[in-house]
Length: 512
Image (cartoon, rainbow, N blue to C red):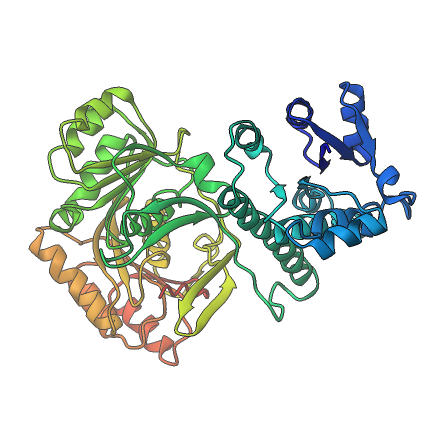
């Protein structure tokens, strides 16, 4: 008796060739709606679903496959005589392969806000068939991804259709329906509960295993949202580790925070130790490196642009572990070829590409905290309130913007000093803002960097004037912070005393 395949797909790419191959291998094809028409036009002898269900498709297509002849055909056990006898008695014929991909819910919510249209693009029969076929993987192949068609045909033709093979597809199938239902639940909560419903689903697609996690005794892997890494992350040399990926993320966010500016950010352990914007990237890197060349050793460099041979030669003067850029030219790659330990990644664009995730979450013991992703508004610095008598010049405002954005992307407590569009000092991850300010100045002094005339940003308010006093003693000229301390008046008074400009953004950007 011929084997039977039920094929009902929203994404019809490759389905004709797949069904032709199934036919060649002795399968009879059952199909529905648009898939049935497409197969018929291509000369595939498909059977329409209502011939099997003995019931018309109804309610404008809402009910097609929810039927015992379909689900009985998929679900009855072939290894139990009682099931086989009952199938015969009820006239239920076996369905041995199910190929289903679901109504395009994601595409619909991206295309329209029309709720009726969105509701109609919630698939019911599809997930039910997928789950039935997956449950009975002992006898049934379940195919949910067009990318798997060739592998399935190969398995059928070359005696690879084993229980282990079908089990792999079973797992894929439940991942598929779980991700689909999660997307619907998250969308409904976004639409009706401000995105914070009773359940929160975080779903990622595996991109790759990392060699290990943070440490060699931990396993690790990278998962992506919306194909961000598949589309925008190309490995040119080496292998990205768990820690590399974490560090890269911080560096890329900072380097790309200034639009098309030629920005270079150097990070170590996820925190910036160098940053600069210049007319060209070679100068930007040279200036960024000056901030803390000791920490930059073995660090991660994010370049908001193209790494040329000239820039590569400059970078090659010290040991860097990771470079990520919009692009890295072939000539530049050749410069790094002799360095065994360097890792090179590019985004395949002229500039770095951000995913701009709308949500952010962090694991805490026993669960996770979930929030709207933080970002600095485009006018946040421009619209900051001048609290002092003196104002900053346009050039100084650019330094304040750089300091403020870098501070917002640096571990709290932090302060950032910027002079002539380059970071000259940074203190981060301290328990005290005073310590952060002083630590930064101490480091700058050790590096022989003059912070006189610099802009200072703090990601939260200064609780006491002592940080302002220390900044003034170092020659800082302009300060930006959120404001909001009960001692704000003291801070303003101190700024005026030293002839500084002081701006309050009235927005706090903690990063923990």
